[in-house]
Length: 296
Ligand SMILES: [Zn+2]
Ligand SMILES: [Zn+2]
Image 1 (cartoon, rainbow, N blue to C red):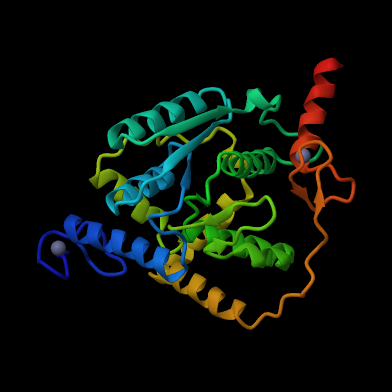
Image 2: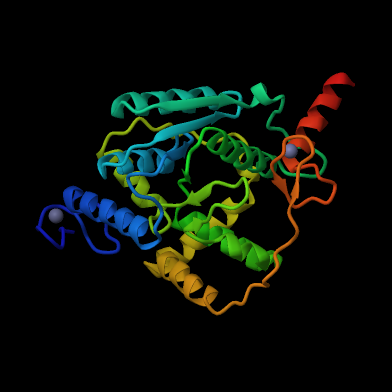
C-alpha cells in the first residue's frame, strides 16, 4: 500500500493511506482543527495537561508541543504496585525531552489509595480520584484549561456503555469541551477525533518514551469490553467509530436538556462542588473511609 499523497510506503490505512510524514501532518492538523473549532484554548491560556505515561496522553503532550503551545503537565501517581513507578519514569523522560514543567502528586499525600471499596469497582474509585485531583490541582494553581487525552474510542465506548445501562444523562458530558463552572476548571479533549491507533502510530514514529504496560486493574474496567465490540465492528466496517461519534454529536443537537440541572452543593470538608445532598463530595467520602479503616 502506498501513500495517497506522495507514493511512499503507507504506514496507516485510514482515513486514507499515508506515509509517516503525511500521517504526522494529518494528525497535527486534525488536533489543531479540533482546538480551533471548539474554541478549546489559545496561546494566552494557562494550560494543564493531565498525563499518565501511556500512549494517548504522551501523544497529546508531544502534539501540543509540536503545535507550539506552552503548558505544564500533571501526573498523579496512583501508587499501583509494578505500574505507577514505570509510568512516572516515562512521564519524567517525556517532559525532559520537551523541557516543559511536570507537576507530580501522589495519592498518599491526600491520605487516599486506589482500592475497591463497598461495592464500587476499583476503576470507578480510581476515576473519581483522578477527576477530583486533576480539577483541584488546576483550580488551586490558576490554570484556565485542563486538557485530557480522551480519544475517539474512549468516547464511543462510554456512549455504548451508557446506552446499554440507560444512563443517558451522561450524554451531556460527551462534549469536546466542558465549560468552566463554579470551581470546575474548563475541560477540553483535543484528541476527541483521534483514534487510539493513531496515537500509537504518532508515539512510535516520534519515538516517545511511553510506558506500554497495562494497568494491573484494567481487566475489571467495564469500558474495555465495549472497546472490543467497537473494534470488531470497525474491522468489518472501517471508519465506523469515527462515523458513530459524528452521528452522536449530530443527534445530541436535537436533545433538549432540562434548564435546571441537579442542585449543586458545596462539600463541607473541601469546599469543592458536589451533587450530594449530604454535602460530602465523593473524594472526601473516600478519604473518610480510608482514615476510619486505618484506625480500625
Ligand atoms: Zn506521503
Ligand atoms: Zn470534598
